[in-house]
Image (cartoon, rainbow, N blue to C red):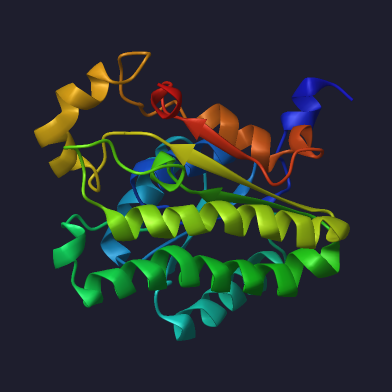
Length: 258
């Protein structure tokens, strides 16, 4: 089979959570360009509509699903709506997430619980629903978890104070490995992308304060941009990666090894 055919996503159904902006929208653009039929979810209907228009200008059609995945009761209806439209889910990108900056001794319990509920529990419940209702019965699936280099290590001294974020992203890294081992028998691969710093709404405040330091500590001397996740996302969503599972791949300009 040709490499082009292996990377082709025509006929595949992809769900991208947190797909209305930032890294989620970048990944959605890539999957749509390669032929996947898209569904994107987010909490805010206006941001979803803006994303749908961005994709439409690229001749990519997307089903928009308003869903706060930190609310367990919202996940089943979202997956049902997608299955009613397309009948299956071949590709799941778990991108929805949040961060919170505060010294560990001052981190509010509310903040800790918010990140655990969204970054971990919400991801688990979406994955469980999609796996049980589509991927396991169909014996096919590509799951991509958007982790972070913050889940691979602590923060450099005098930089960020994001204990809850690092902890939940670290949990997502091992979620990826454990699920890959468990669901491999069903023809499902589970991998994670660990981005470094990319300009986004989530990172804006940190980059305004620490952007020059971050770039200086990055071997490639740059931040991630609007193209840097696309190739890897397509690889992990496609049959070109059918023998890759349980892996966590950093896209960070070398920050995590410096």
